[in-house]
Amino acid sequence: MVDQYDQLYSKRFGVFLSEVSENKLREISLNHEWTFEKLRQHVTRSPQDKSELHLFMLSGVPDAVFDLTDLEILKLELIPEARITAKISQMTNLQELHFYHCPAKVEQTAFIFLRDHLRCLLVKFTDVAEIPSWVYMLRNLRELYLVGNLNSENNKMIGLESMRDLRHLKVLQLKSNLTKIPTNITDLSPHLIKLVVHNDGTKLLVLNSLKKMMNLAVLELLNCELERIPHAIFSLTNLQDLDLKSNNICTIEEIISFQHLKRLTCLKLWHNKIVTIPVSISHVKNLECLYLSHNKLEALPSSLFTLLKLRYLDVSHNSVVVIPLEVGLSAEPPTFRNQRQQSGGGSEATVQVRQTEELVSQPQLHRIHSRKDRPAFPADPPGTEGELPGSPPPSAQPLPTPAQKLPDSGGPSLRLAAPRGERQYQSGKHRFFSQWVQVSE
Figure 1: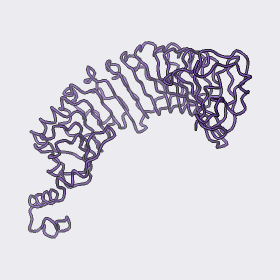
Figure 2 (figure 1 turned 120 degrees about the vertical axis):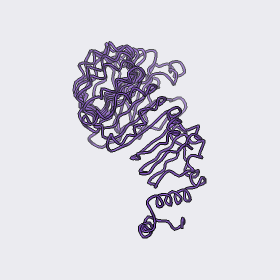
Figure 3 (figure 1 turned 135 degrees about the vertical axis):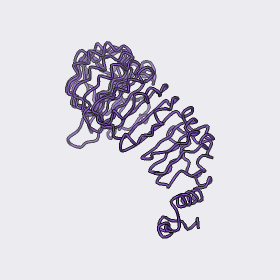
């Protein structure tokens, strides 16, 4: 009868079966179908190279799951009668649990095991009330990801006492529709290192709670409809990485206040509506990476290239047409990405220029071609390494050999974009040696 069991048959025999009997029969059928061997065949490797099992739309959790003692990640999706039994204590390698619209019930013995061993938990839900109450008592949890409706009307349902029990939480990600930062998140301030608020386009209005998150090293406020850099951020003296991607920021005049954040090394302002970069950016002296792609920039201030620690600068998908002379004069220029949109639909090429230790002082133009017009490196004929079509013959260029001046491959580089065909690059009375210009699609 187990082999033939189906919900359609259950309706026919419902008059003879009690609800308890039907549930028991369903459980027997589930365990008969999902044996240890079948479950083992569904175990895969995650991008982090961890053993992972994802179960989808089953009537429950098969008992054999808990016999997979080497499993590291368990994902349960759309399983209405999910029940975590005491047998989970056998899974000593389990590090992550993911519940997707799956209000799991946990037995007391199973909870004790999860409380002491679970490190990462993801819960995807429709309403905050669907989050199991035991989630807030996982005292050894390191990472918590909540995906669902957490608007201001429901924030009060996340109890202050619950957050206080998450004593070792380092990473909190809220992918929701927040209008304010929940005040009870400040209970995590002594130990929280990374906070991510990823909205669905709902405007984040109240951020005062951030001021108390003094130990934050990474903050991401994504798609929150922010129009300016929130002032509450300038109180986070331990902040190292700030990401304000996909907002409506038009002006960044407040950027000078970042000079007080001595540990800030990575600033991401991409996918916004920024028109200009203020000269005061030179005061943010510890920046190493700056992301400004997908904005409305037309020029780059010279002060940007006085940042001695800047190693990576991304201004792709803007309208930048002028590269300041200082790019060629700085001792170690950053990696520079600039991709101009071509109305003619021509292909774009990336040009990599490695700076040399000395520059030619004559006012000469340097022509750059796309890969279509030039063979790829290292296919240069002997004696013409690095030459480009249309460049002066080697006899007219009193240049040192690449072996004498070429920096190490791991050194900083300057990256531009060239349209199809020919483009000229001129840096005042200075220019880079053509031997170290590489064009690639």
